[in-house]
Amino acid sequence: MNADVTSLMAEAGHEQVVFVSDAEVGLRGIIAVHSTVLGSSLGGIRFWHYDTEHDALCDVLALSEAMSYKAAMAGLAQGGGKMVVRWDDPHAARSEEFLRAIGRAVDRLCGRYYAAEDVGASQRDMDGVALETRFVTGVDPARGGSGDPSPMTAFGVLCGMQAACEVAFGEADLRNRKVVVQGAGHVGAVLVDLLLDAGASVVVADVDPARAEALGVRTIAPDAVFDEDCDVIAPCALGGVLTAERATWLRARVVCGAANNQLADAAADDALAARGIVYAPDFVVNAGGIINIAHEHDPEGYTAARAREQTARIEGTTRELLLEALRSGVPPGRLAVVM
Ligand code: NAD
Image (tube, rainbow, N blue to C red; front, side, top):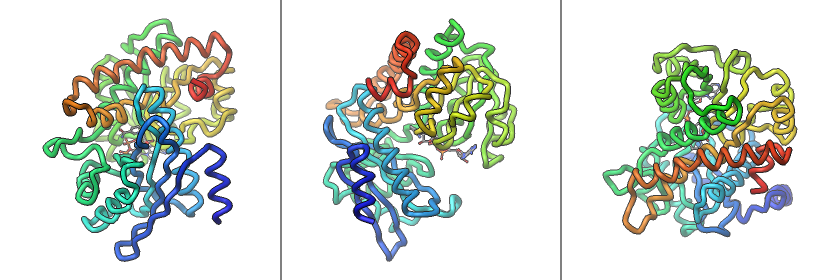
């Protein structure tokens, strides 16, 4: 097992992987620190069902690597990290003791890893983790934190989408664009509102139908997302949704969403580009959340206005990247990693 882990770590240059267990509260998790070259590693805690420990390990390695790229592209003095916690029942509540155990595990890394929210987590979880460590972000604003990063993530995705539409259709305006949002969670729900405000027509799908229906727009079945005739698909659920095979029949002209690691592999990046589908790389457009929590370290304290101003720059970064991808012939996913 050890040789396997270190080989996997070496592939993408991970600095450290920590397996976490607390039998008393049933905690099983993994923290991956991809890079601290630019600063402490920062990344969310994902609560998710994994069939095997190997699946959890592969996920935390890929997610923490993407966080390094995201921080670098957003111009932050931060590296990439992530924690995954094996969590089988999405409806079960987490006890204070469970969250404290996570906090102690994070604290033992002495600031090499700063925790934040990710899939399955909420601000309440961060507040619980903060009972045992100061190396956690996104806690209650009443306690000096920046709160839930998801609204800023959604705003950044909107900025990236405008740039992607400008490249694909010649205009950034989202009025009358039809957008399919996959996932009506923390980010997806806010993105739907922002898109409606921008005049887009929006369709949403979620494996939890109640979440999709609560948004008051047309809903479709989760397995119909990629068949839907539309201008833009916004993946805001889980990664791996863009495969080379799917790229051959996708109907959207733009893919731009919050989900981490959307490309199943590099072949999908090539296949999308070959069909002239504009893929706005996930770690470029979903950086609003990490920008928001990084502003907690501002010497003058966190302000939403400064975080929003920096997040708005995602539009320019995305435009520049997509135009360079067209000019150079290098698909945007690969180009973003190079940059
Ligand atoms: P969330 O857990 O709040 O929401 C995810 C939603 O997707 C849930 O409602 C879930 O039911 C739904 N879902 C899962 N599988 C689905 C499927 N196959 N089809 C349709 N819906 C499905 O998570 P979130 O915080 O909104 O994050 C969404 C994505 O964005 C994740 O990939 C996350 O890593 C990424 N992301 C989030 C942030 C943030 O600030 N929250 C920042 C950067 C990236």
